[in-house]
Structure formats: structure tokens, C-alpha cells
Image (cartoon, rainbow, N blue to C red):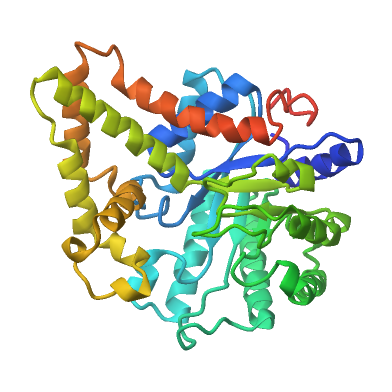
Length: 407
């Protein structure tokens, strides 16, 4: 399979020729989302990236229940099922200290969390991941609200890349690609000086260690979108691109969910974009529609929505999304609209909980007489949302222009 770093070089050349494509990175936050993404990749003859966080996929199974090896195996199993010959790239998203919820919850020390991250990077390498996002931009040793100095971020980035490269060479694994940075620390029109400083420090550090071949193909930049905003800033993206394209890299956007102007991503030269929670919402909306069909049928009730909300509350993960004025309040004390949002956001954390799995099984079984395949309906609803980005990003039939026809 063509390495992602080479795909990025081809994207840069195609842009110079007037062909504009942005890669899509789907966050595989459920089996249905993974299946829908593989189905879309096959139907559109396009490469697909999968950006899996350590919360989603890790040595302990994450909230999807997959280890890195199991995740890659499932991806390949689905590729066979859908006769997908387009390249599928399993990737790590946000690999860094304290970026797994349990590391912060358990108050791991710097040494402890870095050890855990290194072990997880090794598991990703052995599973066959194509790209590692190295992101040491969180530092729980600092006072709340204080970000680590850019010099320290670069030092830890280089340390983790060097560690990964040593492991890869020791295990005689093929070359992989890297992504660095995070939108919260650098990037954006107001912070171009820090962005430039980050790039220079990273170049100097990798050169000192003779790791130029590990130069990242993607640099994450702040391009106008975040958890609460959905308008992409193409002008900022263009300015960042001007800085990284001469180095053989492209800008990657996070927080692309529900973005208002996705067609501007390829127009401004964005290399790739991550989408995740929007697909969870599509999955949940489809399941709720099935629940309404179940109610109209007048038959047995699965109790799916009750089971889901109970599992989200029991998980406690909803607390991570509370606003400052909500901290300390119980779930039932929140406004109905906020409870609804928290359940929708938190659903991805509990799809694999036993009670939710069983309620979903009952829901599908209750509808089998009226609907031939309820699961396929859910997958197709997710696929329709993925297709929106495929069309906006110019990805239909893109394995041809990218020279990926043979996978």
C-alpha cells in the first residue's frame, strides 16, 4: 500500500496541476461507523483514513472493545465483505500523555502516562497502523489553563517519534507516516509566529537525530472550527499551507463535524479532515427512528432509548462535556436540551455496553417482520452523512488521480 506520506506528495502535485482533493479521516467510534466508511470507500473508489483515538481503540479495548490488532482485523474483514480494493489507512489520533481519559482520571504522573503512550504506540505499530498522530500538548503537571511551552511540546514530539522509529526498526516493520500538532496549541492567523517556531524547532530536532525521513506528512492547524464552531476559515488554512507545502506536508483539520462549508477544504488546499461525533449522531438518529417504528408497530418494546440513556449516565463520561456553570450538578438537574445533547455525544462511549447491545438486539428483532435488515438501515444512514464529505472533498474516483488503483 502506498504510504500516506507519498499520498500527500501526490496531493501536492495534483494541486499544482489544478486537481484539488482533501482526504477524509473517519473516527471509528463504532462498528457501524467503521462498516459504513468501508462501504463508502468501496462504492466511491477512494482512499479512506480511520483516525482512532486511544479512548476508542487501545490495548485495553477502549470503548469500542477493539485493541489495535482487532480494529485492523475488523477493518480488513469489512473490506472483504464489501469487495473494497481502495486503500484503507488505520491511523492513531491524539497519541500523547493524558489524552486518554483514564490517564487523567487516574492522575497518572508524567512518567506513567508517557510509558503508557509508548506501549500504545508500539501496539499500533505492530497492528499495522499507517500513521501515528503524536500529540504531547497536554501537561497535567501545569496549573489548570496553562499550556506547555512550545519548546517542550516539540521536545516530547521528537522523543515519541524517535521512540516509535526505534521500535519500528527493531521489529523490521515498513515505514509509517506521522502527524503532529493540535489546533489548541498552534496555528491560526493570530499565532503564525508560534506555528513557524514550532516547524523550525521540529525540523532542527529531527535533523539532529537524523530522522528527516520521519518528517510528518500532516500538521494539524486551527482553521476556524472547534467543538462549538462550524465555519471553516479557508484564508487561514491557505496561509498555513503556504508554510508547510514546501516541506512536503499538508494541513489537517480536526473538529470538522457539521462544518458549514466543507467544499472550501479542497479549495483552500487542506490535506485531510477528521470527522467523528457527527457519525455517532447519524447512528443515534437512525436508531431513534427505528424506535419510533417499533412504537407504531404496537408490539414488544426493546427499551433501547432507556438503556442508552442509563448507560451514558452510569458511564460518567457526560461530565467531561459540562460547561463551567453546570459542574457539580447531577444529570437530572440539567436542562432537557443539555441532557439530550449529552446523551447524543456520549452514545459512542456506551455502544458496546452489555445492556445497550442487548436492547439493540431486541430492537432489531422486533422490527424484523416489518424491515428486512434494520442494521443495514442504520449503516446506510451513516454512509449518507459520510458521502456528504466525500462529495465536498472531491474524493469520488480519487484512487485514479492519486495512482492508488492497485491499493
